[in-house]
Amino acid sequence: LPVYFIEPQHPAKFFWRGQFYGEHDDFRRFSFFCRAALEFLYRAGKKPDIIHCHDWQTAFI
View: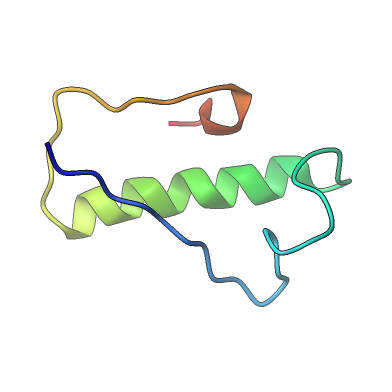
């Protein structure tokens, strides 16, 4: 079972702050992450039967 980890790189340092949640731009940060995950699947030619999404941060997927 392949497992892929995504480490977002963004000039605004969306994910390298003092805390994970409760920032004023959580919507933008987590929608950026979801888009990165979907873009990876598209570019890699992956068509998974299941995508495990955990908690509200991945709701956009």
